[in-house]
Image 1 (cartoon, helix red, strand yellow):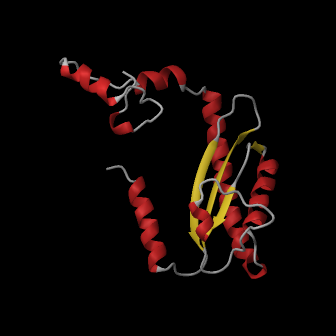
Image 2: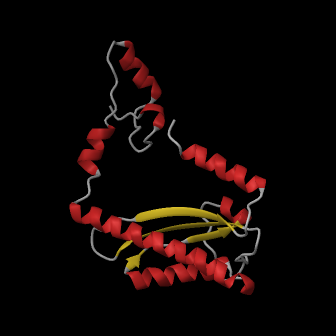
Image 3: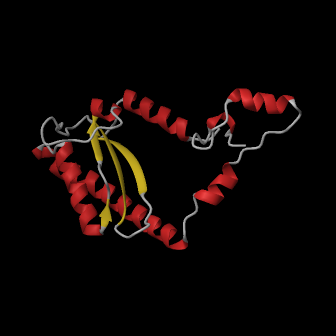
Length: 177
């Protein structure tokens, strides 16, 4: 049945709870179609997997370069937009493409899931800031698959207790139970 226990895979959950209850009341075990659906509709070719892995490796390098650039330019007050432009330039140099993004945000902007810095209104990155970089791209070849990573950092030597608490909450939410 197109059902995902506890809505673990929302794309698979197409059956309402009442129908699941009705079927179970007849003594039938409801089994998720997630594995079958993934096998039938979401398989990558070996070339797509290899391209995804190459793109992910490049994104990892680029995000590290972006954080390094923030540190190197800290005295000049780099902006969110400047770092986003740096990432876009690096995408072009690495043969990666994306329809939009990346997200480079500080502090309150980090809570906006669709924030994309613009030349006007972009925050200056300064010591004590929380920085989030979310970047996604794929190789510029037909059928290629996106890679996507999100990293955060604290600008400074020692994050505040509040920064550590928030980081630990997010880390805990990612850990399977």
